[in-house]
Length: 64
Image 1 (tube, helix red, strand yellow):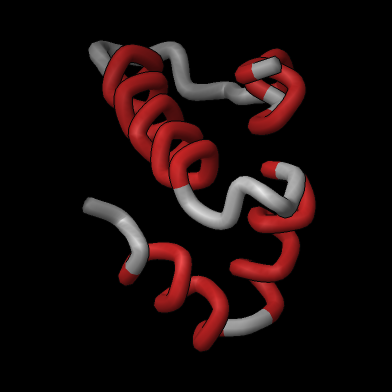
Image 2 (cartoon, helix red, strand yellow):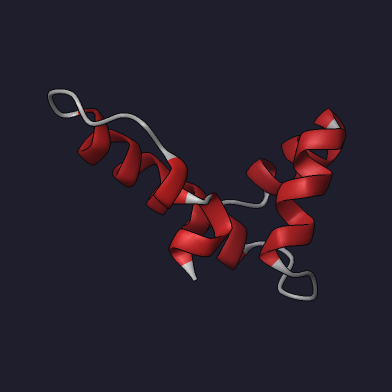
């Protein structure tokens, strides 16, 4: 599920520790999306967050 949500197979960041650093960031983002608004799919939350700054702030504001 994690790979499918962020399309990690196409990522081209293999130098130094970039891959590990981005994996940590992606895991944090996925956890935020999982915990907020359980009535919506992760895919829908990611799309709406990209389209609307207000929605992205509401998702981040619900994080605890």
